[in-house]
Image (cartoon, rainbow, N blue to C red; front, side, top):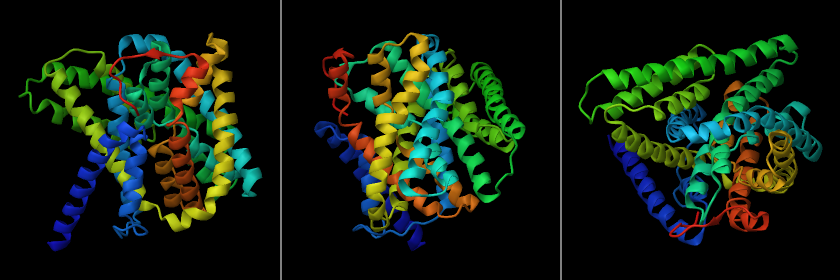
Length: 401
């Protein structure tokens, strides 16, 4: 009983401190999610909190639920105009762009660190996706107005690119543990099953959720609970069937967000608050998993990999995907720079840990350092980058990130 009480006390305190310090961080321009990560690290075994937390199974479970909620909320807040403006470029970035970014970053990691090529590509795969929570938090707090098309591309891309990275990570994990286990045809079939199946289940699940919300008459207070269980059920069914649950819940969120039904405002507010809770829990948990003394030797190689990721791989992938679609070099440059990494890359490294990939703990540490570098370097410099590129106009009353 006392252990349970202590656990509730710790998580209540961590959550309250995270929110209060997160509010303060906006005034000094610190990336909000970085604050949650740091608080988690301070509460961990190397910090004054001294909490020992090493359960990667729990991390995968909690992380999966948190990301499902975060991605559904991202889809829910995507309006019809954004879908029309950004569906094609965002999809290109979330598929071809992820592949280019992962390949270039992975090859660089292999050459810079001398690790096996499969391990290097794993680093590239986990670092390739932009983070929906980090990007949304950044865009909400910018002190200037981002053009609608660019805003839409960034938000939709960050919601769509996680499934592609999950697919690559799973594929590379199997290759690392069982070399030569996949043929080209097998990879293509697996891709179609993951992405095509996830898309179809997302469309079907989204349609079913809309019908349920329209036709089932419940008290307004119960509608958000119904929505939450529907999200979790759709995610779980998709994963059990071997398709992408992350893609399914994002597409379902877009469909629900385009519809009108009783208590839609209540559901929207509930899911938004729940998404914030999911972000806080996810980043605090990932911070608890990290041990700073083990990260120190990884700082220099991670800085080199981060330079390739931020300055070479992401820009080349962005320009390759967006230039043929009529985006200017200024627009592509801005989209490239706002591609923040966040909790998703760190979460993805849990998969190699669970799959038994050799030296997966180094992958976790490298990803953790790379995410912190991305949040600091890109999160703190979006304003100057926008001014240099001539993107956006000042908006009154906006708060810093």
